[in-house]
Image 1 (spheres, rainbow over the protein chains, first blue to last red):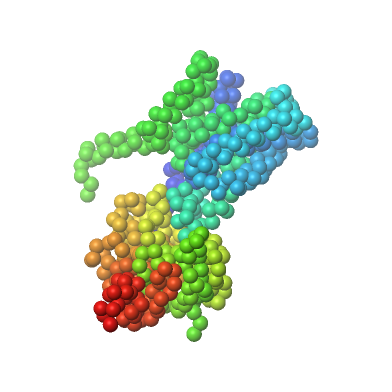
Image 2 (tube, helix red, strand yellow):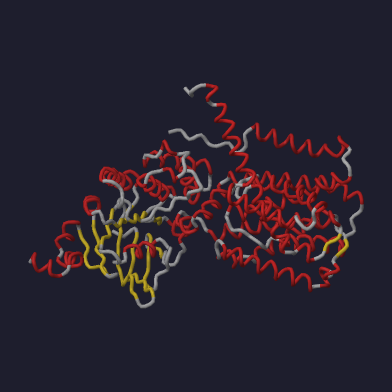
Length: 325
Length: 245
C-alpha cells in the first residue's frame, strides 16, 4: 500500500488564501472605501478571529463554551488598562490582554474535567460570575460607566490592517492545527476521551492547552474590539449575549470545520448590522430561528451547505464525462 | 528469568464487592497469556488496572521491575502497556489511517516516522485498502482489526486484548487467531488476552490463568487448566466435577 503524505497546504489553496489577504489589504486604498464599509470590515475581521478561536475548543474538542465573553472581556479590559495607565503602544497592550486572557482561561482547568452539557453549563456560570466580578471591580473596569480609551483617528484607521492580520493569522493557524497531529489528538478527545487516553493522549493536558490558546485568541480579539469602539463597559464585553455570539458564528459557519467559523462570522456581522438597523426587536428571534434550522437540517452550517452543493455539481457533471475508467 | 510484566497481590474493590482479590500474574517476553473465567470473574477489571484506566485498591504492577501501579492510562501507554476494548471504540470522526496516526504520535514525535508505522500496521492487519475510509464503514471484524492496529501503533511491549475474537464469524476468528500469533512472533510483543472463544484462547496461549470471583484459581498450560477440577467446577458447577471424578 502506498500512503502519500497529505500535503499541509496545496499550492492552489495557499495561492487563493494569499491573494484574498492581499486583495483585502489593498481594498481600502484601491476602492476608497466609505468609513462605514471600512469599519464594518474591521469588525468582521475581529469577529472572524474570535469565532475561529472559539472553534478550537468548541469545535475541534467539542467542548461547547458559553463563557468565552470572559476571555474577550479580560483581553479588552487589560489592553485598555495598559493603554490608560502605562501609555504603552497599542499592539503591546493587545498582546498583554491576550496573555492575561490565556492565563485566565487556564483557570478553567477544573471545568474541563466535565464533558458535554455539563461543561457548557459550568461555562455559563463562570462567564456570568466574571461579568459580575468585573462590573463591581470599579477601580479596574470603571464599573458600569466603563472605560474610554485614547484611540486617535490614525490608529482607528490602521486598525483595519491589524484586524486583517489577526484574522488571517488565526485562520492560517486554525487550518494548521486541524491538519497537524495536535488536531488529530483534539478530534480523538472529542470522539472518545477514554479511548484517547488508551492510545496515550493526555486529555487534561491537551484540553488545558487548547482552551488557553483559544482564550488568548479571543482575548486578542477583545483587545482590538476595545480599541475599535474606544469605549468599553463590562456588561457589553462580558455579557452573556457576547458568549452566545461566538457559539452562533461557529454554528452558522460550521462547528468543528477548520475555516467554517470564518464564513459564520462574516454572515453574522453583516446580518446583525442590517437587522439591528432595520428591525432592532427582531434580530435575536431571527438568530434563534436560524440556529434551529441549521441544527435540524445542516449541522455543519454554511460549510455543510457548500459541501452539499459541491457534491451536486460534481454528480451533475460526472455523467457528461462518461463512466470513470 | 525476570518477568516483563508482573502484578503482586493486585486488588480492586467496588464498595463491598471485591472485583479482583490479590491476583499475582507474571508475563514473560514474547509470551501469550490467556486469562479466562466466567462472566464477572474480574477479567476486564484486571485489564483496566494494568492499563491504568482504574487505580487498584492495593497491590503493585511492575513493568520490567519498575512500578507503574498508579500511572494514568496515557502514561501507561508511553511506558509500553496498551489495551483494546471488548466493545471496539474507534475514533469515528477520523479516517482509519488517522486513527492509527493519532496512536502512532503517542510514541514517536516525528510525523514522518509515525506515518510509516501507521501505513505498515494497516498492511499488517489487512486494512490497507481502507486507509481513507471512516471506521463506521468497516465490518465488526474490520473494526476489531483497527482496534488491534491502533493499539500496536503506540509501539507497546505488552498488549492487552479484551475479547478481540468474540463476535466475529468463524472464518474471521481463525484469521484473527493467526494475526495474534503474528503479533507475538513478528513484532515481539507480549500478549495477555481474555476470550470466551475457547478454541482461540487454547490454541494461542502459552499459559492460561483462570479467574473466578476475582481470585486466581488455576494457572498452567492450556491442557493442565482444562483438566483442573477447580476450573471445571467454576464453569459448570460442583455437580459436574463429581460426575467427572
